[in-house]
Picture 1 (tube, rainbow, N blue to C red):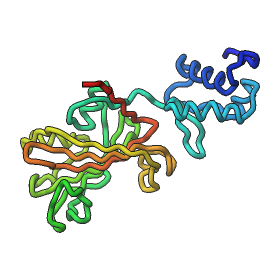
Picture 2: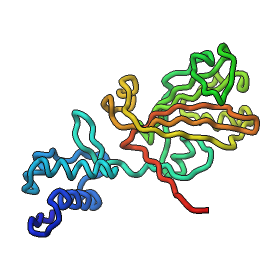
Picture 3: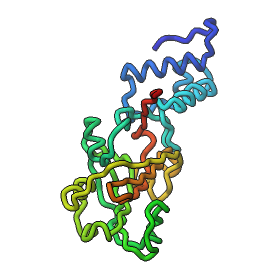
Picture 4: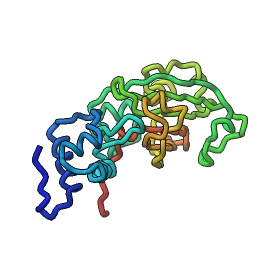
Length: 244
């Protein structure tokens, strides 16, 4: 670890930030590992906890680190990054990134359209039957997100009786119902993980997360509405922006 230079004109918190980033880049702390405490880092660098806190806050803001309440500061896992892609399933998305998806069915039930809270783009009578499929999605064995898919049973008779353990919903839709997704609209917001999802995702309540709403269409119109909460320390979104 390179010593700080108090005469360089570069603020000490920036020197600490750059040093920590370099140490992360060099693999001193791997993805998911906890950094030393602010007090320990302060002693190592010979600076105050306030200086260390400033450096850590900047690294958190840049997405290099993630703070978990009551647990500490961890190196963020950058390996799972969603970029420009087609209308695919979570299974296919992870496969494209070289990862193996997994999951567990948390709920599979039939509810009414009113209970499901379908968006206006999916007009249905309030008492129309809807499949609610709530699943934990994993990268290998590591929890990544909780996804709740809503599909009208009128379009997919018998789907509520199928077994979705370790099966791609889109694969079932394609092979059993001949459905080919054409486009989807996704909306991302950022918030804290709710109490009811925290233990399933393995995080503390309030931990940073992406909330994703997705409306998916085929040639006949919208057929699926999905609400997801994705761990902010294990899921990133990267988009390429280009002028026409």
